[in-house]
Amino acid sequence: MLTTGSPHPKAAESGGAPGHALHVAVVLGTRPEAIKMAPVIRAMENSPLFSPVVISTGRHRELLEQMLRRLRLTVTHDLAAIREGRQPSALTDRLIKGLGAVIRDERPDLVMAQGDTNTTLCGTLAAFYEQIPVAHAEAGLRSGIPGNAFSEELNRRLVTAMTQWHFAPTPRAAAALTAESVPASRVMVSGSTAIDNLLWTRHAGEGRSAFRSDRRGVLVTLHRRETRGATTRGIAAALLRLAERRDIEVLVPVHKSPTARDALLPALGNHPRITLTEPLDYFDFTSTLAACELVLTDSGEVQEAAPSFDKPSLLLRNTTECREVIQAGAAKLVGTDPRSVHTVVTSLLNDPDLYGRMADAPSPFGDGRASDRILGRLAGDFGRTPAPASALEVTAA
Image (cartoon, rainbow, N blue to C red):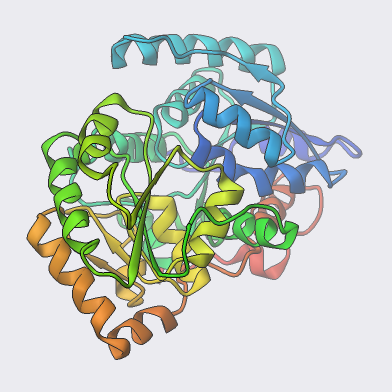
């Protein structure tokens, strides 16, 4: 594992300049990244210790622009990097060049990225080339299968190799990092910033549930590459069987992907107890999640959010990097076999005790103060102010 063994010299250089706000370049490109970085950016904007700039690579462009407006965030640099038909190698080249140019122009004290997308990898690599230290939010997630989930698992591991500050959402994620020889002094269990934003959203009181009835709501989200095609058609068949029950409403926000639409719309579009919608914005999705009875999802961010609303989630995946939610008892990994999906959902709907145990399981992803811990640690390491005691926790237990 490639790691540098001492604090980055830029932290030491900058730390002695009184009154100098830390210039932080925040890199994002997808709607989930915007959601999870929003509370960190807002906290920076509200602090005299930080001066953030937001760099968007333009991934998930239509959804992202809508999300940024609702989250009250302003993009400083929009690279508009996505072009239809681009191969991953060409996109990576374009992202690194674009991000590198902005980072050279801005010369931030540090670059912050989140998660495991290609934007995160390219932003980290561009910062590494410019000798700018990197802070990684949601660090340490591992599925254990390097080739799984297209490029995400590889991205996580490559980003780790170039990161100075590793902000892990859970102790398990921190343990994964130290097991890969990342120095414990660089790892902090911060909690998940997704929970910070979830609580902020509920407090804001915006959004409206997309369910049409007062039946028991089953919320279904499908978006991952490995779920598309025949797998999605199989899940659609399972949803049709579930909708034979007259006590439920199945709600599916349909991903913009043509392959997802081709698999779902013809199969599910005419059933009276199945509601198909366009992708919901974050606020409406949050209200819909709060109104449902259970969740079927292949989404990492949804499985993190569901326990905060006491909603059991069934994961339509064969592996997950967020095993804490399973260990806590708030979720089950059910795979994508249609018969298995139908059997597990039916059991959960028919067994009040099982449902109650899953709904009452605690959220393993934090208390909504992750952003404060992250900024406290960064400010402390740059000599701006002593980091709070909670922000100095580096346990990997």
